[in-house]
Image 1 (cartoon, rainbow over the protein chains, first blue to last red):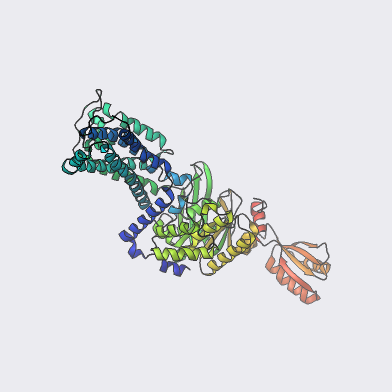
Image 2 (spheres, chains in turn blue, yellow):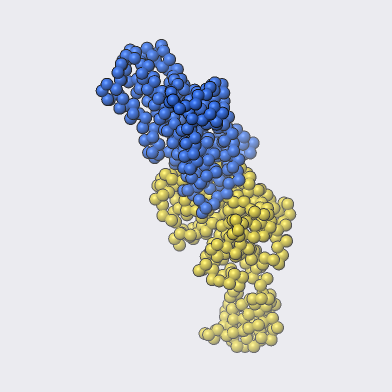
Length: 284
Length: 331
C-alpha cells in the first residue's frame, strides 16, 4: 500500500504554485459547500437595504421631483455610507470572517484540514479568499441592486441620461470598489481577531464603536480606522453633522494601497498564528 | 520491554531505522499544570501496535502528538523520519482517524472523503477513484450518497476510517477505531487492519478493550498516568516480568498429581495447583523456558498423557493487570 501511495500522491516536483492553487481551490469549494449555502442571516442582511429603497419607491411623494436624479444620488450616498457600509457590510464581515476558523473549532471539524498535507498558511489564505468571494458576491449584488433601486422612482429619460452620459456608472464602479475594499479590510480585521479572541462579538463591538465615533476623532486618530479610507473613496460625500471634526480625505493612491496593505499584514499575522495552533476542542 | 529497564535502546534507533519507525524521544506534554504524557521514549516498527491504557492515561495525547495536532512541551518526535510539524510531507504518508465524532456539516459520506482528497491535491478523477475505493474498503458504498449527519455511530466510525485510509498512507493512526462497531463490522475492521499491516503499514491502534488489542496487535504500548509502563511484543514484556510475577502454565494431563510432585522438585517452580476437575495442573514458574524443557523430560520419562500445554497469563490482559493493576475491560 505504501508503494501505491507514492504513486498516487502528487510528486514533490509538482508542489509549488500549481499544486497550491489546486489545494486553495479545493478548500474554497469545500468551504462553499459546507459553510455558506444555508446562511439565511447573511442573505437577510444583504436584502435589508433593498427594503429601504423599495419603500422609497412604493411610498407616494417620497420623491419630490422625479426629473431630478441628484436627489437619488444623495439619497443613495446616505444609505450606502450610513447603512450598507457601516452596518450591513460590517456585520456581515464579523459573521463571515470572524467565524472562518472559529466555526470549525466549535463543530470540531478543523482537524480534518490539519490532517491534510496542506500548509496552514495556505489554509488561512484559502479561507480568507472564500470569505472575500462570498461577501463580495453578496454585498456587491446588494450595492448594485440598491443603486438601481434608488433611481427607480425617477423619470427613465433623466436616469438614462445620468447613467449613460453622466457619472452614473462611474459612481456605481466606485461604490463597488468601496464594497470590495470594505470586505478586504473588515474581513482581514475579523479574521485576525478570530485568532486572538474566543468570541468575535466583543472585538466587533469595540471596532464598531471606534468606526462609529470616527467623525468625532481628531485627524491623526481618524487614520487608524478603516472607514476613513473607505469614505474617501465614495463618489458623493455625505455630511457627518455639525459635531464632526474635519480632516483631509486621503487620496485614492493612499487609501487603496493602504487598505490592501493592512489586509495583507493582518492575513499574514493570522497565517503565522495558525502555524502554532493546537487542536484542543475541549477548551473551546 | 518494561519502561525504565532499557529505555535507552528503545529511544535511539539508527538513522536508517528511524526512517521506518515512529520514534518518540523523551517526549513530555503538559496542558498547563496538567500532565498529558511524561518522558516517553518509543520506537514503533511496522505492523499493528496496540496502544493500551485506561481512560485518561494519555493514549489520545500520544496519538495527537504523533500527527502534530498538539506539540510536545519537551522532546522530539519523528514519523518515518519526518517531523509532525511538516504537514505537507507527513500527511502524504500518514492517515489519522481521531476519536472526535464530528464532521463538516452538510456533506454526504462520498463528498466528505472526496473533498478532503481534493484538499490533499489529488486531481478530480483520482480523488473520485480513491474515494470510492476507500468507501468500498470500509463497507460504505451503499451509504455513500447519504448525509454523514444521518449515519449511525458505527457508520460514522467507518467513514472516519475510510477518510484516514483514502489517500493510501504508510502510517495509519486510529484512536479507538472499534468503538461503536457491531460484531460483524468489528471483525471486518480487524481483518482490514491485519491486511494493511501485512502490506507493510504501521497501524497504530488505541483501545481500552484488552482482548481486542490482544487479538490484533503485533506489539503493544502500555500507558498509564501519562507514562509508558511497557512496550514491545506481549510475550517479551511478559518474560521480563517473570521474577515479580511468575508465569502461569496450564497443563491438561491424565495424572496431574504425579506431574505436580515432579515439577515441585524444580527451584524455579513456585506453585503447582491441581485443577478442580482433576484433569490438569496450573504451574507458576519464574523461568518458563526451563520449565518447558523440564516438562518435556518428565513427560518422556513418566509416560504422562498430555492433552494441552498453554500459558495462562501471557496475554495483554494479564500484563495489564500486573503493571497497571486494574481490570482493563472496565477502565
